[in-house]
Length: 198
Ligand SMILES: Cc1cc2nc3c(=O)[nH]c(=O)nc-3n(C[C@H](O)[C@H](O)[C@H](O)COP(=O)(O)O)c2cc1C
Image 1 (cartoon, rainbow, N blue to C red):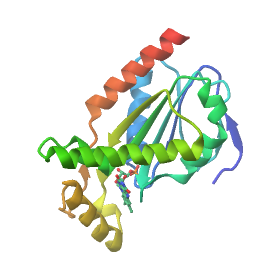
Image 2 (cartoon, helix red, strand yellow):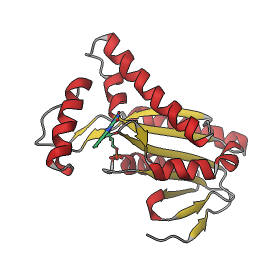
Image 3 (tube, rainbow, N blue to C red):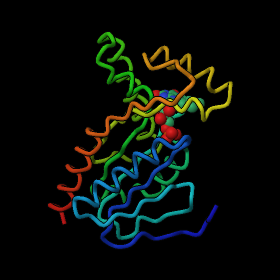
Image 4 (cartoon, protein in one colour):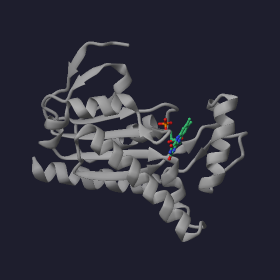
């Protein structure tokens, strides 16, 4: 891993992400493309690739997935270190999880959807408490089941979790629950906010 500290260029929208199985990388890349389509200069960075200083970035998008009730530790560390700089800019935090998929499934009973949504917010509150940072905007995003990417033990555990969340237990393929239209809409709204505050 490159441990050199990189300072992001002045005026850009920094899209910083942390992922384990790749879905959050796709989500961050989609938001970066959306922001560019709305006229923003964007820098997209995986927090695993180095050490970053948000420098003169005009705004910041943070995207991290959830594993075992916590966001990725590199995102916790980065956000804690940069919390004062983040607090001075427009920010959007994307929390990627399977619980959010459970919260969005229209064919599930209301109480199960509400419970899944509560979990999403509990995990987010844990992140805010651990980092001392509260984003300007928070969007929970449904992730994916990357069954073919998991080892047999993780596949077994995820099948159980998926069943509890009303998600697919067909382990022969991947299942994507991300609502791309909702993500595009939030990116467009954020681009407007940045443009107006510039
Ligand atoms: C080992 C493991 C643990 C997970 N734990 C949780 C969890 O506690 N809560 C949740 O909502 N989703 C959980 N998930 C689902 C992930 O958040 C989901 O698959 C997400 O899309 C992963 O994003 P990534 O591919 O960017 O890492 C877990 C997934 C795995 C493989």
